[in-house]
Image 1 (cartoon, rainbow, N blue to C red):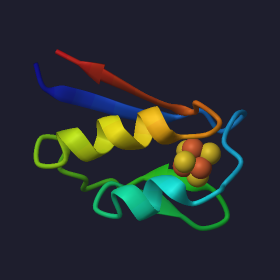
Image 2: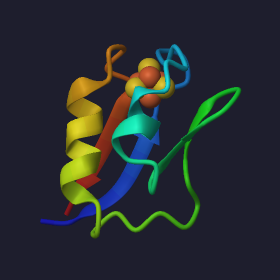
Image 3: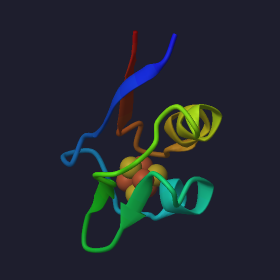
Length: 65
Ligand code: SF4
């Protein structure tokens, strides 16, 4: 299984910044939280899962294939 997609639900996200603290290689939080265009999902699989689990708004979703 490899992570192929990571999405942030902007309607739920409170822009708290926690995902960037957990994995700055994948998440970038400024005015909004976003997934970096050049993010390497495979290299940071554990961190992405941790960020999704810890997101207080449950706004991070990822797809594994
Ligand atoms: S941890 Fe969740 S609520 Fe906080 S900035 Fe990231 S996506 Fe948004």
